Image 1 (cartoon, rainbow, N blue to C red):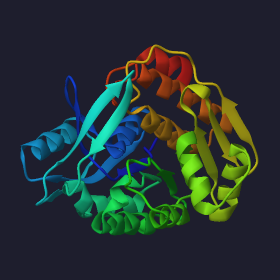
Image 2 (image 1 turned 30 degrees about the vertical axis):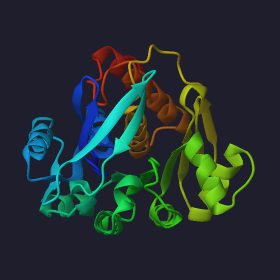
Image 3 (image 1 turned 90 degrees about the vertical axis):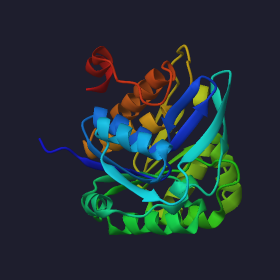
Image 4 (image 1 turned 180 degrees about the vertical axis):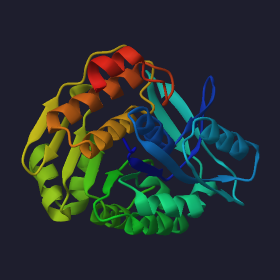
Length: 293
């Protein structure tokens, strides 16, 4: 069976954690988990011509994450991370390689064939990366799932960035804190579900995924909704949990699964990632057999 072609486009960097550095950035996390769920993935980003960039490119090659990574004159991105009760607090450094993403030949080839592309707002903080992310989205096939996983970080977003992204997206993933900001930004009122449905109508979206951390999550399509409480697990850290949720969401939609099954898989995978250190654990066989098939 032919594998689904999925792309994660945006920031790639080193998370500088208290106990050492780990590969970070939503696109690589998304692609890693999508590949574990059966996709052929490509990470589209940029690194510097430096030791940290060489390390990233080697990891991307080793993990077979599809090298849509350009090399910039700017330094490879880093993020200082402090964990507070397992929750990451980020300091994201500016004027780094992923602010200058270029689409290399592989990136152009794969975006023209993509069945799902996941992107966020952070990498659009610079004009160069924003322009090339939008070119990638606009060059994808009409039926491609374009998942806007908003990921508001620090002050690296604006109404213009969010509006341009929603106009290109057909799936929108947002958490409850971000929804508060977006509802104010677009002057939408009502319950969380009503706001999600209003945004769905406003931007002609197929689906909105609203996550609420420990409280639970909700998937809303035009026809139905699914609500699931977050499982109680022993949290190691939450880094990458949202990206694994996005990957399960994308793959479930591409497989044409029922909404509740898509949701259940996304919740199960993200809960497992929370029990592990780092963003890209290997999914154990028993979890795959019991909950993800």
